[in-house]
Amino acid sequence: MLFFIDTANLPEIREAKAFGLIDGVTTNPTLFSKEISKEKGDWRDIAADVCREVDGPVSLEVVGLTAEEMIAEARDLVRFGSNVVVKIPMIPEGIKAVSALTALGIETNVTLVFSPLQALLAAKAGATYVSPFVGRLDGLAQDGMHLVQQILTIYANYGYATKVLVASVRHPRHVLDAAIMGAHAVTVPFAVLKSFAHHPLTDSGLEAFLKDWQKVIGTP
Ligand code: E4P
Image (cartoon, protein in one colour):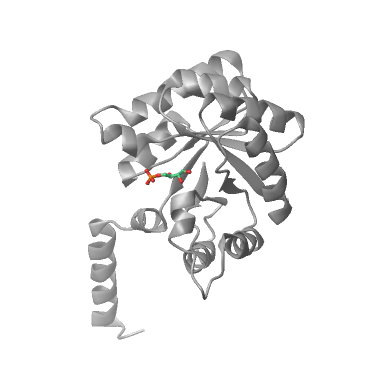
C-alpha cells in the first residue's frame, strides 16, 4: 500500500521522510493557504520546495474551472518537477481536462470524488489516481469506505489502471479498512500515520522487559 501525506508543510514532510514510510505527498489549495507567509514565500516557492524534497508523486491542484484553464495550469505545474501529479476537481470540465492531459502524458489525480459513478468517469478519462473523500462522506452520515469498496469492484470488473487513493482520512480505522479492501494508496495527515505505531500492550510489554533486564543485569 502506498502512504502519501496530506500536507504542504515542509518540516512535516521532512519528519515523515525520516520514518522512511512516505511514498508521496498530496496538497490542495486549503493546505497551501496555511503555509503561505512572508518567510516561506508564495505558493510557487513552497510547491518547488515540496517537489524537490519528495522522491515520489506530489499532487498539486489546479484552481481554474474550465478545461482550458486547467490544462494551461497543468502545463505550468508540471514544470515544478517530474514527480508532479496534477489534481483536477471532479466536475464535467475536469473530466474533459483529464482526457486531454492523459493524451499529453501528464499524470492526474481526480479529487473531490463522492460517488462510484464519478470514479468510473475518472477512470474512463484515464486518471492516474482517483481520490474518494471518505471522512467528508462519513461526516454526512454516509459510508465513505463503502464508496471505496464500490470503486475497487468497478475498477476490477473492467481492469482500469486508475489507482484508488483514499483521501479525507480522519482516523486509523479508515486506513485499516482501506488496506483490507486492497485500496492502492491512502493520504493521511502525518499525526494519523504516526499514531499507527502505538499500542498500549507494546508500551507495557517493553516496560516489563526493561525492568526484568535491569533487575538482573543493570541499566543498559
Ligand atoms: C486529498 O488529496 C485531500 O487533500 C484531502 O484528503 C482532503 O481532506 P479533508 O477532508 O481533510 O480536507
